[in-house]
Length: 382
Image (tube, rainbow, N blue to C red; front, side, top):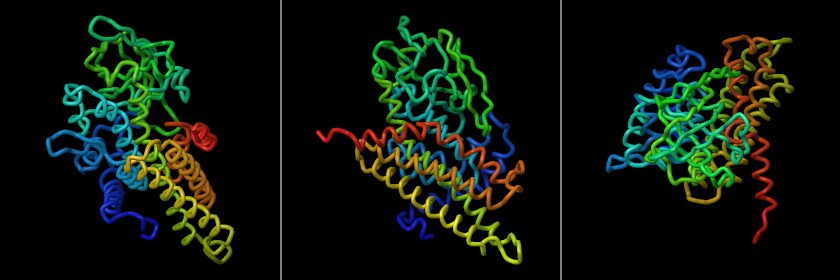
């Protein structure tokens, strides 16, 4: 596998294992789930086959530690090549849980992380609001002090695993005039009085929804990190996960390319296979080249993060930008090679066409990634 010549044998084995488990075990479970709702059987299967163990690594003393960014990328690419639903379930679980793992009190960690790692509970990451997407400083969900804790009032939208997650990592304003410096992170259980929500039906039917906080009480013990320091909690999670969004995109792009190559070898027209037409073969060559470039950008950003290089924002931005844009191009090209049959409901490429659009928006839209890169280029050297 020359495409992965830069990986060590254990890394390559993790990638292969994720792809194989997804194809043989997880894809049928994913297909049986209810679109747009949490597939708890799938979550349990991710744990049963050891993939959640890779996200929630155990320490010798029995505690939990963070996955490496590289391992997270390999897991997400491998899963995406065979089951985008399984990939998304694993990614959303990690995204929702990591603010708790990294900044929760020992009591909150002990209550929730073992259940999340075992696939017995689902987590959600609640940052985006109706009027605050890329501009996080514009959050309007308020957290006001109330005796031994805080009262949360406002709304969140496009929240992972909402409204059915068992626990949410929620970000709210505690100092309204302080911008991003006045945000606090909270662990909020689903059964909290005053918390409600509705599912949202998007182009690709993942568990995404809206949350409404009507005076939800959160005890001080459920503050994640320090009051007014929640933006740091959010960014530490996003810095780890952003390169792996690119890995998800690479996995989808590779699946699309593999499908197009097989079709070009088999499909005949005008006395020869499609692959014998230069107009087709050169398109496939272009897609393959872009995918490999995206893969290397993703792995480079992940390895920089794992090496402790900070900041890694520009590397992660380049990786996410190029990989997600490449995946859109790869899927579109693969559909063009296949023709109308690829647009039939149930076809792999019809599925990927719906899946591939969202990663160019979430965890920082492509325009935001370009802004991050350009600011780094134009920064003051001093």
